[in-house]
Length: 242
Ligand code: FPP
Image (cartoon, rainbow, N blue to C red; front, side, top):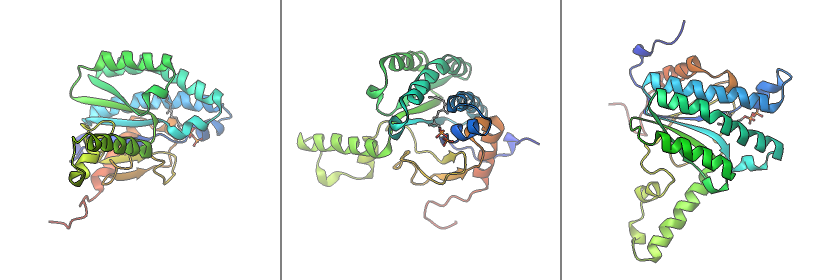
């Protein structure tokens, strides 16, 4: 029997996802890694729909890390082409559910064609205010924090900011998307227990949901199961129960 969404008392505002296991999914079927990524791209679409149905405001997916640039050039090229070809289907889904798309990461490092295609969807969906889909591309949390430190230092040097007043909020304000609330739930597929340099600052208080399911098999129902697990957690933020 499926998850009854109505029975869930709390829906996280922001869900972040580490999409892992495309390669192993493909290997288990005697397919190429790229076939795994293709199927994984379908899961992204399913999760967009599921998030909207459940009332999640922000969904962030880790599509390409700064470390992923070390993969073989054919795989990187395949992933970039897949991203471009997937965006047509995603755009449809974004319009249907009135979801805005944003990108976080080193945008300038992406191939020009990819940037142009992304920009088209970013512009086409910029008017939607209630839901947001964030795609982390050429993203690394340590780089994000280092870049924030650079911008803060520049302001301090220019006399626009008092170094003694730098606090947690100052750091948060200089990250890539300072207006986005921290994720309350992190999903990681394929059973690995690692953060892999994803949203290190923003995930400080997130609940982790790790499933053995490979990303290409993670669809609407699996997303709802993660929300159900989140509902069973007891969140205290370091405090005590009232
Ligand atoms: C991890 O699987 C997945 C990625 C590195 C890429 C994520 C991309 C998609 C889900 C496809 C959608 C594409 C875009 C760009 C939106 P893995 O290759 O690390 O799997 P493995 O650990 O089993 O080898």
